[in-house]
Image (cartoon, rainbow, N blue to C red):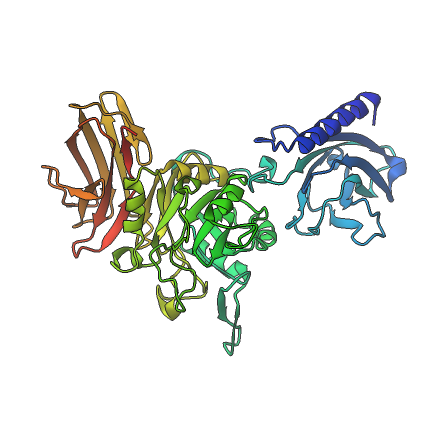
Length: 510
C-alpha cells in the first residue's frame, strides 16, 4: 500500500469512527468507507497474503467488493475474511469463497453463503488472499472496496448489495405477509407423515410460480430469516425478497418491513410500556410499519391478533394498515377496511395494503388447512423500480391498490386533477372551493364488474355510468370541491358484488 493510499485509508477510518460516535447513520453509501489497493507477482504463486484494515467501533456489517486484473493470463485469487481473533480464534476465519465470489457481506445476523454471521468486533480485520495460480512473469493488481454498516441502517444498505431487480417505473405485484420455518409456518414432511417447520425456499418458490414481483418474509418477532434471504436472493433474480417481521404483542400485531435491526416487542414491560414507546423504536429503523388484521378477535382463538391498545396510540407512527388479510375483504366481521377508513377520516395518511398471512407454502388450494395461499391478496405498488427501497417508498407514498383475489392481471389506476395539477393514489391535491376535481380511472380484466367511488367513507355516485363492459374500461367524472379536506378512492366489484380491487385515496386539501 503506498503512502497516499495509507493516508486516504486513515482519513476514511477516522471519519467513519467519528460518525459512529455521533450516532450518525449514512442515508446513502455511494462511496466505500475504505479502499485498499495492492499487487501480486509471480513469486506470490501458491502463497497466502493478509491485507489488513481497521474496523471502528459501532459497526455491525462489513461488505467487500473485490476486483483484480490478470484473468486473461489465468491469474487466480481466492478470497477470505479474518476477524480480530485471528485465524485460530473462536471464529477467526469468517469465511472463504475460493474464487467464487467477488462481493460479499458479513453482518451480525446474516452473511453471504460461505461466510458466518456474528459480532463485528472493532480492531484489525484482514482479507485473506490465496494465490493458486499466477505465472512467473505475470503481475496482477487488486482493489478492495469496503463498506461499514451501522445500527439503524435499513436493510437495503449498502446499495452495492441490493441493486434493482428491474429498472424503470411500473406496477409491481407482491405479498406482504407470510410465515415459514422461522416462526409458525409449517407443512407436511417429504413422506407426508408429519407436519414440520416449512423451509423458506418453498415459500419463495411458490411466490415465483405465482408470478409475484416481491414478497415480505414476516416471521413473528424475528429476523433470523435474513440469513436464508442472503442465500436465496441471488438465484431468485426476478423476485424481490424483503426482510420483515410481524411484531406480535398482546395488544395487536404489526409488520415492520425493510429492517433487520433489533426491536424490543415486549409491550407492557418496563422498557416498552405502550405502543408509542414501540413506535419510537421503530421510527429509528427507517422501515415501513403497518398494523395487521385490526378487526380480528383478541381472545383465546387468536390471542393478540386484534388491534386492542390499552392506551391511546399516536397513529402517525404507522405508515400503513393491512386493510385486507387473506380473503377477508368481503367479510363484514373481519375486514380491516372500516378500521382503515376510520383512520383516514381522522386525517392520517395510512396506506391500505394486503397480505395473505400464509402459514403453509405447500398449499394447493386458496383456503386449505385454514391458511391463505401466497399472493392472496396481492398488493400492487406503483414504484420507480423493483428494489426494496423503491417498493417501500411507494408504499409510504400510498401508490398502491389491493388485488383482493390475487389475480395476475386485474388492475386499476385513479388520477384526480385540478387545472394542470394532478395526483395519483396516495398523493395530495389542492382543490379550491368552487373548483371541479376531474377524476380519470382505468380498470383492466374486470369485465362485467363495476366501480364504486368513496368520499370520506361514504359512497359518491357520479352521473357517469360506472359499469365495466370490456377487458379495459376508462372512466371520467367531475367532483365539486368545497375547499375543505376530503379523501376520495375507488373500489372495483364483480358482478356478484365481490370486492376485487381496493384503491388507495387521493387526499384533497390536506
